[in-house]
Image 1 (tube, rainbow, N blue to C red):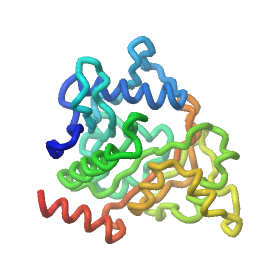
Image 2: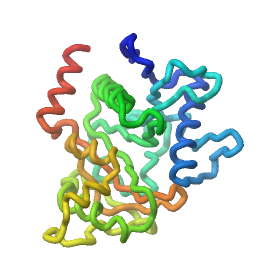
Image 3: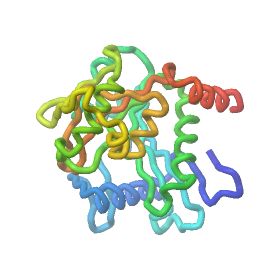
Image 4: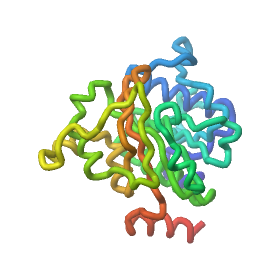
Length: 261
């Protein structure tokens, strides 16, 4: 997954402890320092956000080649990935504590759980996320993944303040029944808070995190119900993307990549 020589970035699956540590350091910067997250394995002394799933997941990392890996600050973008053929090792999907995943598990399709997606603030708005998307596309094609899913977050836990974007997602992007996961109590929060006829699309999209908007453009849908994740100080929706139902433009992008591999 090496990138062109004229870029400052290299993209790869974490291949050694330094890369994993770099991903955990980036996650600390984004989720703990920016968003106020907490967790039982968070290491504040070394500034690492980590959990028990890290050894089982693949970590797609974007490296700034100008930074010494020994500093643990060389990772500037990251995705955490768990394909369903590794589920026996993990014991469960990470998001199964927030969502009933029965519909996806019963589908018999090749699944990929996405999580801990983040980009360093100094690298946002440029090519970093584009490189991560391309790396994810390669990963999906190489493993014949059929369905991608995972929690995506709104900052904060005040559902009333998020009523417009949550209601917009519910009315316009709810997953089909055969793919529809459901948020679980006690963290479950209803998303159907504003009637469809009272929606303000512009206001909803303005309040929508960039990552969620990107998945929607790819044809992503959302499960039934949000989940209030108080340790992470977020309100989560479960995004589901069927690669077979992508818009033709984005499906062509994947096909071109596959044909050139």
